Image 1 (cartoon, rainbow, N blue to C red):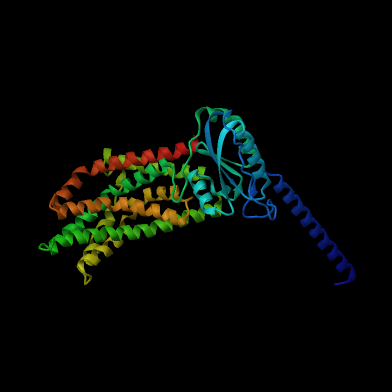
Image 2: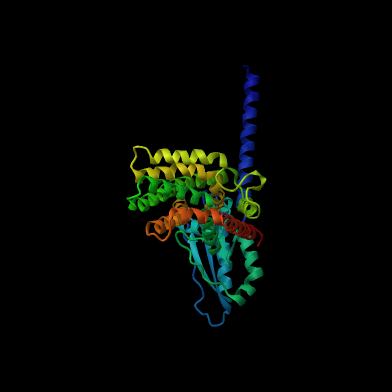
Amino acid sequence: MNRKSYVALLVVVLVVALAAIYVDVTFNTTKGSSSTCNVTTTGCSASGATGLVTTTPTNTTNRIGKTIYLALAYAPGCPHCEALNSFVLNLSRTYDVRTTYVNAIANQTLLSEYLSYYKVPQSDWGAVPILFVNGTYCVGDTACISYLSGNIASLAQTGVAQVSIGPGSLPSLTILEITGLALVDSINPCAFAVLIFLLSTMFMYNPTKKYLLLLGGSSFALGIFAFYLVIGVGLLLGIKSVLFATGLSNVYIYGAFGIFSIGLGLLNLKDYFSYGSLGFVMEVPRRLRPKMLGSMDKVLLSKIATVPGAFVAGVLVTAFLLPCITGPYFVAGSLLKDLPLGTAIGWLAYYNFLFVLPMLIITSLVYFSFTTVDRASEFRERNIKKLHLVAGILLILVGVIMLSSIVV
């Protein structure tokens, strides 16, 4: 390479370097002029900065209207947080505004509870300031100041109650949704059929050892609980990974799973009005039932003890139940996706307890002679359409609630 080539190459390098510096300066300038800071970077924070000034006026006699409780998530040194806080403090001189401050750096656990409770999209989880008030939220000082300016009078007129946020907190509607979905799964005719088959098999081979019915039925329910919980954790991690990779908004997630829930509900109603129409039922596919029952029979008749065998049967049969029980589970996962993993697993455990509760009840009724296995089987056959009706109604209600949460 000759001297002219070296000079040309040096010029190109200098031009690229200058362009990169220009782009970087321009980007940072634009970033600094936005209405939010990002707690994952230091570009919007002052080194050595302290917390916000939170002193409120002591004279409350001349304040207008009722008490307004709100929460402000901030980062020390964030100028946008300081701007919003100054505006809130000015409002508190006129209105009875009570502010809870959440340090996004020092108290990330509490912040995540607020973000989950108010269903803030994960794309906004790194942004501050965020204002939580009256069941909604806003991000950035510009948006929040605009919201408060336009709504402070009406908020003072009605008042805003204080919201208790803590570990595991979920909005009341979400708790009802999780409970409803678990109940849908729990009354699924698939699970009833499997449990009845299990009890019949155990009673047939151990007619004089009735206590084995109680132990076996409980062990079977525990096997389903454990394996279904593992599946739920994997499902939750999958949803979180997809959201992290794609940055999809909660609006799209709730919309998609809301429609999915309504679709499952309509298919269950189909089995109430015309059982088995369209060539399928919302249960274990007919072609898989012989394999499922055969697998259980082999486990129960193997060298494994009866009670451990029932646990293994519960684990195995969960795989066969997946086609007809994972629908509500997917919807539940979409509701829990924003919670910290440990908290979400706790809610999954609650879901699965409700799921196996009817199995434990039926097992207890048979053991204490309030009913028999044959009567339980007859009840299932006689009410199978009604079970689909109840499941369909609950799924449609959950779907409507999810869709309404993104419209309102």
